Image (cartoon, rainbow, N blue to C red; front, side, top):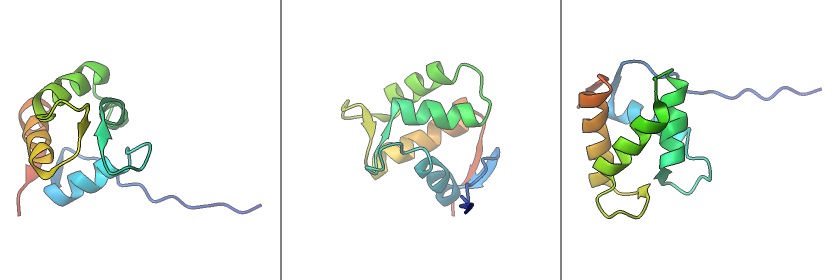
Length: 95
């Protein structure tokens, strides 16, 4: 029997922007390079954040500027970083 090791980035309340992006990429369920509300919900749930479904909805409302249901460009990622800092009290250091 073979065991596959899966390295996952564990979230913390302090990380760099690149670590934040790498952490979010783990939750891109369909591996299309875009984050849906469901992807965000799973990411927040992994941090044991209460009401992850609601906070994911709020994050999408704030960050999804083109209203296509996905976070899919650098401007939207930046808005998501700001949301995480302000609303989720995550410390994301900019390099």
